Length: 396
Image 1 (cartoon, rainbow, N blue to C red):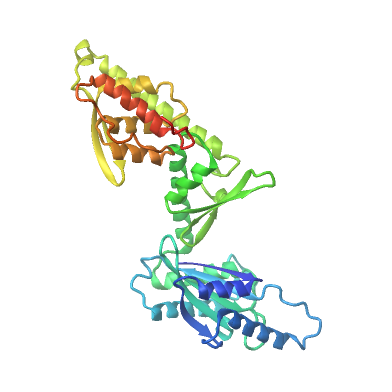
Image 2: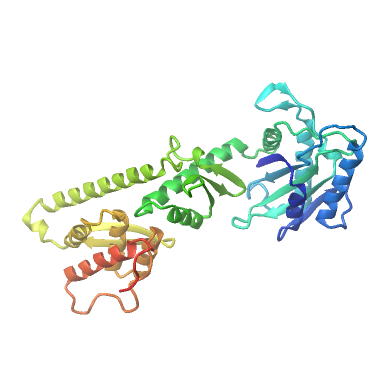
């Protein structure tokens, strides 16, 4: 389980979102009428603040008038939970949070306890729109029912620490461990997307990550250049500076990372081609022996395709792809092999995953009396067309 917390100025919007989001379920309303609209509840909170602040002279008004928390157990941790279980989690979290009187990262820094348990607050259960992961939202008044201010110093650290205390109690995964696992997974998926891209551009990068279930948001400077981005996984958001190795997925380094990945891919492809060439030069008999094959295991649309391509046909592919440095060599070979074996839908899917698109069209296939080499050449050329970026001219 992980938890986040912050002091906010836009309390009205927060409580309206917490209670009014589609499919939101009210878990608990504390010290407020439960038969009024969300904005009316916020008005009651402001009335309480005004009541306790009106006789305190010229004291500086509170700018951040609410505390907001988000609590997210994993699907496994909350499997089978009833509304009563979510209520128990909310109340336990608040009790633990109120007990923390020091900065979690530095116990020498003493803090004032919060008193959220004796404050006006609303707890709602939400479901993530993409992953469906359930999580709690809590919006609480900064002024408790005794007129004291709920301290917001290091409130984010306190929320995370409260979650970890409960994680230890119930044997759940610690938030730091989940964070590291998420960063590793996101980094791997970002690098995989870069490997599949025939050329780097932000639109393709974002589209491919969104296809993997992430929410990516770009940040641009005054001239429209991307200067940062964040990726959301579940209910957690990660900056690009946290991803990859040595921050190599940040906007300032990502194109160089793409180039290095593709240089490596081309080197591997060249090595494979050299190895195949050497193996076919063992004897003149082997050169003409079409039973010698190159084997592909290709995953497309969650199905594994096992394709055997004769080495002399693989050489046709290699010669045709020799001048296609701007395209992903690995994808080209897979698409050509699938077309040659007449797995048309699988070939189209592989091409699309790398930024290409379209299809060979109805009726496309090997002619009845077509020479095998000519068929291989047509497959290679069609693979190049399919793997080109979507911005290509589609007229044929």
